[in-house]
Length: 216
Image 1 (cartoon, rainbow, N blue to C red):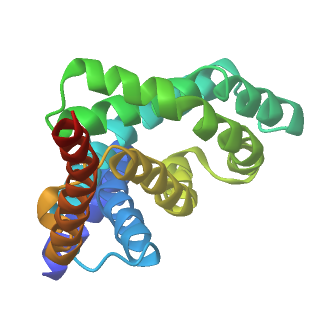
Image 2: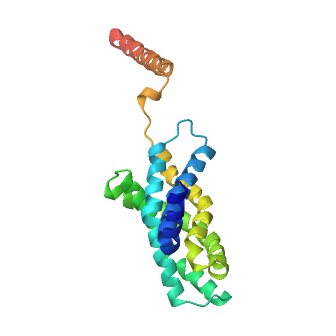
Image 3: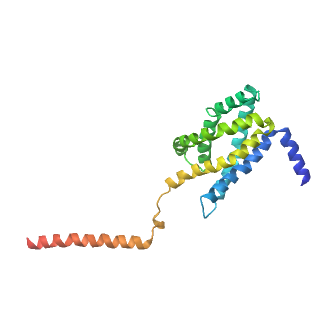
């Protein structure tokens, strides 16, 4: 076991993207797990957690790594001005693209039609983005100033734990809004009472009509 850990450490130090992918494949499902607990779900949705793990580890971590490398290349200085510049540019480039990819990609993993994936992006993007621009510029400024480049993906993944809880919450809202009302979930007593009231109303309508016919 120790040999495996040492080998993984050597590989992760040599290839930081591997370390980022491993971090996101754990942190993203953890965020989803916390969101489900906070929302008080009685039955835990394991497939949803698996989808978060796949999306976080195989998509978010590599794309974030590429963005951080590009940002470091174009703004190599570690001063406050460069850090703020990178953080602000991220909010109009990588940030919006990442959010659209999240809602679209997670919907695809749920095997939804393309039209529904696009609709979810349209509905959920702007409310999510308004929160993001209040949070991520500060976190990314700290990231670009204080955190070494080789550890930046891991730092962002830790910061994104709470953010992932929020994303999972936003993702779950649509399911609640579009959840159809099933007849099996309606109390049978309510159904029987409704039928009785309908029959009673029909009888009240038929009696005056019958009297009118007989009177003629």
